[in-house]
Length: 282
Image (cartoon, rainbow, N blue to C red; front, side, top):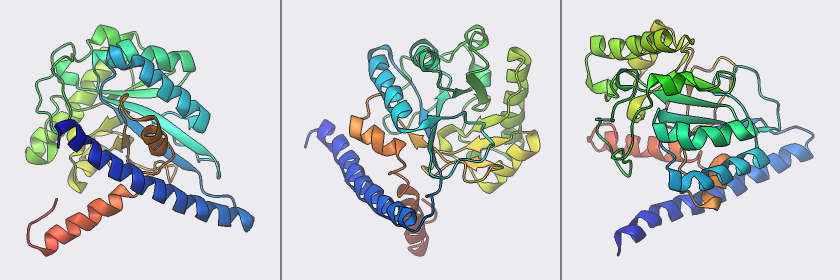
C-alpha cells in the first residue's frame, strides 16, 4: 500500500464513524424538538497550524462554509450560547507568518474573529521545535512583533503559546512557570495588549499545568481534545478540533458540525485499556 493511501485510510475511518455519530445526535435533537424542547447550543473551536499560499483559496472556501453553517464567535467568548444555535471559533497555533499573510486577509474580509497563539520567545525566528505526525515547519517562520502589531485588535486576538514551545509536562515546575508567565508578560509588553488566552504546545498538559495557568493570570486555556466548547460561560479549559486547509470538503463540514466529538471517548477508552494492561497512560 502506498504511503498516501495509508494516510487516507484512518481519515476515511474517522469520517465514516463521524457520519454515524452526526446521524445519532441529529435523531436525538429531532426527538427534543418533537417534545417542544430546543436542542442545546453547540460550538466547535477549530485550530490550524499554517495556511500556505497554495492553500489560501481552499482556506477561504472553508471560511465560507463556516459562515453558512455556524455563527462565528471569538475564542475568548464568555457569553451564554443561545439554545438551538451552532457556533464556531477559529484559532491558529504557533503564530506563523503564513497565517498572517494568507489566513488573516480572508478572515478580515468575512469579519470572522480569530485567535493567533504565538511563541513569545521566537518572534521573527525560524521554529526550532520538534514536530510530530504530519506537521512540518521547514518553510515557516514565526511572525515578528511588527506584523503582530498590524493585526486589527477588534478582530484578531493574540494568545500565548509559551516562550519556546516545549513539551510542558516534561520540564520542571519552575521552568513551566516561566514558560507560562514570561510569555504572557513579554507579549503584553511588546504588543500593549492584554494576553488572556493560552494554548498548550503539542496539546500536552496535566491538572497541575492547568492550575499554573490560572495562577499566572490566564482566563482560558485551549487543548487539542475535540470536545464541545463553551459549555459554561466561565469555562476555563476548552477543547478544539484540528483543521487543515487540505481537509476534504465533507471532512471539514463534519468537523464544523461537531461530528468528531466521539474521539475523546475512544481516547479515554484506550487509556483505560493501557492502564489495565500495565502499560501506563497513552
